Image (cartoon, rainbow, N blue to C red; front, side, top):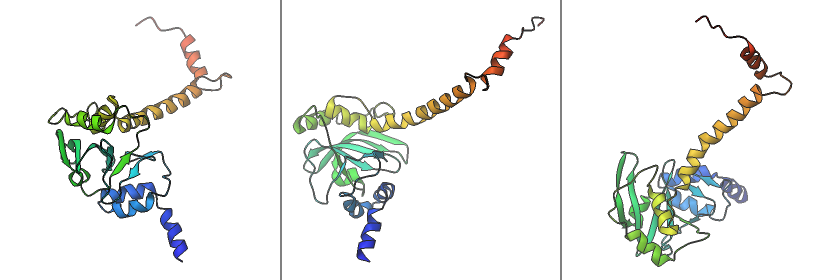
Length: 211
């Protein structure tokens, strides 16, 4: 019976985990996920390689922290002594704020925190911390061009990128490409059985020049 319950618990989806984290109840349940491989490469702003921060664990200096929100992930840089530098934004009230230094608890807002693994860091933790603090007070938040992930990627690799935004933009583009290929397949058939043949016939008809 106990084995069956354990198996059923392991089957909990990554979506359920993020949902619980967003409600502030996911820290304990998320710990059970740390040994289970996420079924998706990316969901809700989290990557498979992200590591859950254990209770009372201090992140490495200059680490990239990610905490899930409803439908997206919020990013920040750990600068030591329980402090995080991040771009403050409150999506619910459509508010934006400056780059600020806050406690880990204020950054997480009762949600779980993950540490993002850096495969090829350009700077060490001390330099990442210095770069993050050099922008304290900056108040130029833009969702599409200067959001919290743009800020962290600049601190870590001197790159101005938001990967979750790029993935979001790629979804409709990918759908449009698939639809375009399907339409092209209907219009351009080699045996003239598609819609392309009547269209080509119509193009050969003389135009009425009386108007």
